[in-house]
Length: 155
Image (cartoon, rainbow, N blue to C red; front, side, top):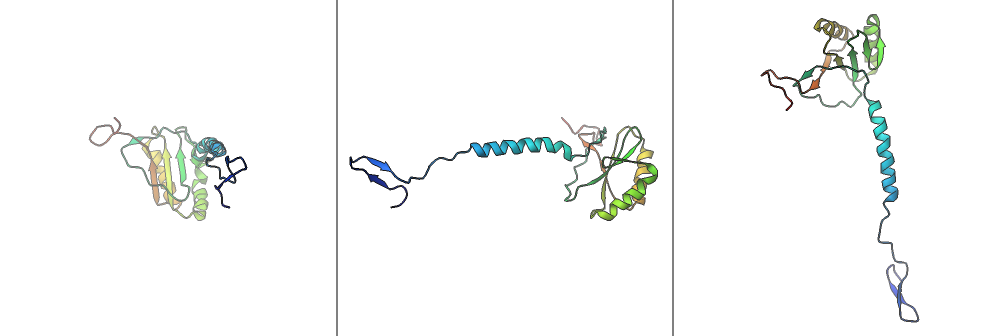
């Protein structure tokens, strides 16, 4: 006798034997999803480079995502240069970047600089990046800045 077959007992009343349960219990699934949501909410801020900078705003389009974690160099308004989140003295910048370049597949490097830093300082750092062998330098900015026609891209 297959599942879902109704057999009658001696009194003529039907009762189901071996009937499959028709409802799904989603409580364990919801519990797991909520735990995963909390884990990702806690872990997501830790995945970004945490150098606080006031990036200049531009109307440029964003760069597509890379398969490898991007190497970023940050120039803070106080003066220190950071490779990812590690402060590097200026005289060691080129040697450190050359060592990092040997371990990476991509030659792309992201330069993040505070908007209050003089242009000459940024060009000095770009020269050091070029001397270290990085010719593919991406200047990181925030979107929503003014366009050449004088209008703001926001609003």
